[in-house]
Image (cartoon, rainbow, N blue to C red; front, side):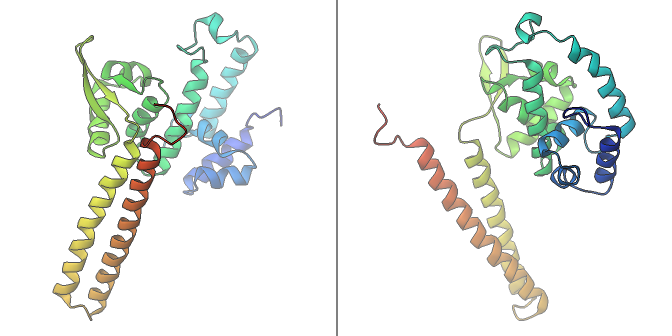
Length: 242
């Protein structure tokens, strides 16, 4: 196997693994490869629902001459504001997209979130997202609506461009965890009421009460943990200067 390149046989095993419902990590273990390699390969070639081994191999073959004649990113004008190769940044974003998708976030929403996370400013306009992801404005609008609802991003007005910017705050995951805990609390209350309605001693009532107890306990733990880490990250430590 030349270098770290995937072989046609590797790509067939990836396709078979995806068709069989395996995770990227499981496929990586079977091929003795890093999970990030499998994630990049799949996301670079259409994602888990569109990956085809033969098409991925042809795309890889087309990239080989480009690697041999590649010039430094800065010389190509292909570097970002921090001097990083945009292709490398894109690979990081693709890997993050795959992992967010595995975590249950829809693919387009995961792409928008990954784009924001891999931008140093932590914010992009709709037009910038369209250009960066090469998708339609409607797709961006739908994705940011979902992410706002989940408290993963917020929007703010950019007076210089007369446009809205989509922003990731430092406490984004705290807000998302708290929102999740609130949703679980509502579900726990509904399950508890349903258990009483159906009869707490009936099999259905016991099942619903167990569901309520679990969601309540985990939700309380999640909220306490989120509050703790928010204090750790936002409260200046004694050895920090003002």
